[in-house]
Length: 277
Ligand code: C2E
Ligand code: MG
Ligand code: MG
Ligand code: MG
Image (cartoon, rainbow, N blue to C red; front, side):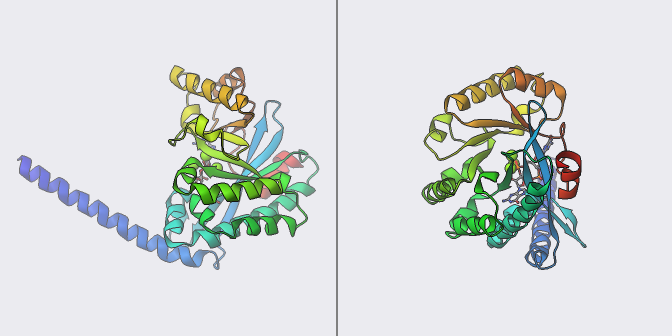
């Protein structure tokens, strides 16, 4: 019986793997035509302070393909990294984010320190032109680098540290600020982070979920907030979904938030109409 069951599982496993590979090939085929086909768009999620003022927004990439429907970034970003398409895609993200930042800056109610945050994956730092591409996208539109932030994950600092740090320093000297995304999920300690050119920590959503119910998460977030303050880093909580979570964060001294409680990621027009007009 055990043998039969084992064999059954083995076949099932193979079938799953075969389907995954098929899906990957299909997605990859469409992916390399998607920029030219105009299938990408950006949505923007506001970041707020304790008064509820919108002090920034994060640009998040969306891909709609006629055959595949919506494909999530968690699926296509790794594929774009594997094929090298991430460089072209990252450039597209930067250019269209800056086009949108021009429109945000023209809105009536824009915060003077508003920052538009762009996700940059570790592979993109292998492109030695990244800093000049970023600078060009900002300066050619008459925008200020002070209104631009880059989000990178901790893994970048492990895979690719020397090149990445050099680019980060150049970006900072332009006036672009740097946030560590999904903080707490990687392997780096705050002591390690302390020596890097960064401005802000984004506490990962997994620590924020049910924060009011989970004393372990409360202790962790308390530690992260206190240590980021002693390192003079800004700190923001991501994935804030309800008022109870926000209230604990305020208690712990965290004063910037992003999450469904305030807004889902929305098209630029809607963000302007609802928050900046
Ligand atoms: P991330 O940068 O950590 O982005 C936050 C993710 O959490 C987004 O998912 C956002 O829609 C989601 N989120 C925000 N608030 C809440 C909340 O309250 N509850 C829950 N459950 N989720 C929330 P999304 O848009 O699917 O993006 C996933 C990841 O894909 C991003 O994680 C980022 O790592 C990557 N990504 C997205 N856009 C880009 C891009 O333009 N370039 C690169 N390199 N990566 C990107
Ligand atoms: Mg991010
Ligand atoms: Mg994140
Ligand atoms: Mg993430």
